[in-house]
Amino acid sequence: MRQSKRMGWGGPREGAGHPGKEPTKVVRLPVDLADAARRAAEARGGNASGIGAFLKGEARTSASAPLVTASVACGFPSPAEDHLERPLDLNELHGIGRADVFLVRVAGESMIGRGLFPGDVAVVSKATQPRNGCIVVACINGDFTMKTYYRRGNRVKLKAENPAHADIDVPEEADFQVWGVVTGLSRTF
Image (cartoon, rainbow, N blue to C red):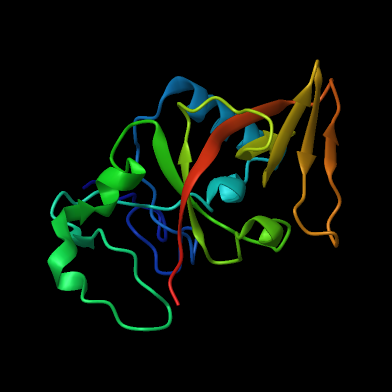
């Protein structure tokens, strides 16, 4: 490494750089996902924090557990050992590992009426076409939201499932894109 003859120039300096930032990595994304992420970052003045809610995940093919096919009563015990089926792989069940599936952590309380609570992890499929009444992850003018999707003609309404939150009537001139449809949910207690 060649050092400059001027003092203080060249080489690493203590305290230099962006403190407290996460390391970055170049990754391949489908073009539509990369373009939407870029638009979202530009709409936020270059800050990509809006897409930071998308989780880093890794599919493990060995993550499975025995599946009991008998119904489990919430009152009296049931002899479930007689009803064991092949192990259930939760990655397979939710499509984790497919290129069209991503995870997003739920923030806010606008969807509690549909059973989505802050901290839950939603499984989202980009391959599933939105239809009236489904829950979508959408980007409106660079802001991400999760709401119930309704379309009538050219008009799109994103319905909050909590009366304390307003619905969103998407203006025709808005930069609007549905990123995917929520197909599953994970919650820990």
